[in-house]
Image (tube, rainbow, N blue to C red; front, side, top):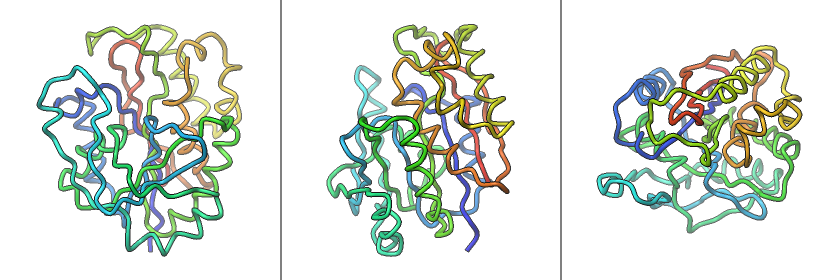
Length: 258
């Protein structure tokens, strides 16, 4: 079986679920260009826990973890299957990483908002993975490496968050000009990725004031570290989308190993 690639996808505003723009078009194109995965694992910025969990719900519900948006968003259901038959095949990988199962939780919008554009038929098994709030960025990076064997089983791993994500300074105009500090940090991350230099990305707080403004909380940044940690020596880095929304959210999307 061909080794599955790894993705990091910026997801931004829930409005992207129903909008047609360059960003959502890039997600659709990405889905078309990928070989069909056996299953998908999404590391979610919107599921924060004590300990690390994956969803093992046979038919995960669509979670609407956003408020005050148009009704049409709440009328959408992403009715994909959960991971069931494939779970036994990869259970030892999760056990080795001390990852626990959650049979009740569905998929939050960090997962289904991007998958809706990539795989609109919702016919690929999906599981989400939580972020352990007690772990340091270095510990998250090391945990991610334990997930590498999943790729050999044809499981597409997606980190879904935003490299730059500052809701306090958000501009409600989606096309607002990005802040200089946001563009600067996004470019710093890009250059370190191109150089294959991950340690500064793990220790991002040392990257200056731009980093502090761009990552005021690390819940949306950590899924990016999971993707970076899974890059292997022969994996080609590619950026499928570069841009900003709402002035303070980087929508950068990237892949390793496509």
